[in-house]
Length: 329
Image 1 (cartoon, helix red, strand yellow):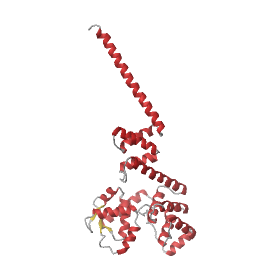
Image 2 (cartoon, rainbow, N blue to C red):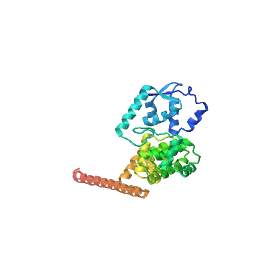
Image 3 (cartoon, rainbow, N blue to C red):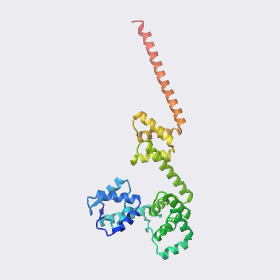
């Protein structure tokens, strides 16, 4: 996406009226971040905002930006110029052709078609063909905590028929994200992302969700340790924290120990400095506080030995000098 490509804001001219509340209510967190950024960057209604500026500021990809724009464009709040739209569609087509991706993407596109929609008759026929029973829809509704309308049933069926998940995977997703008050639209996007990652079984999905919980819990503790409060992590900090948790597999105790050593050395919190410590421990196979203490003790003994040797060497030369020159003087 070129820097010249822009999105036009047109929130005053839309005819939604009270329908705007449904648009906002059904938007997910990322969609709302995009809309807020666009509106705040525009000086007034009708202004255009550079796509590249939004992507850079929110740290999202052009495809992710277009997914949110597509949602609000349907509500009449945003639009792309013909030139920009043509370029974007062309770039996406080339990208899809190059990668030959056959599964769904976050922006709802595949190599040949978008996420399908169904008429009432088509939905009924598809449920019969896929053996998606009313009992399953009822169970999904119970897990999610609301009675589904036809559009929501369509999303549930689409996750099975189009995305590729089985019923157990769908129920796992609904149960996990219902606790976070996420919309079905958000859950469908996540399902697409997970499937594209190769997570296609209930066991793999459960492991992914457990890992996500572990990461979120540990990240929260790291924020507290480093005194970050509600400040978002920078891109570099995210990379470090992800490595500590997922690659190095360090727990809170080890990260707190690295923090303590960082502050002792620099007198202030520093993720980069702590990362250097943790990388060294990981490379040396040091993964418990006890092993850290052992390594520190060995290092202190080694330093003391070097000092002692240095002292002995100095004493030797001093004695030699006295022998060589002392008597003559």
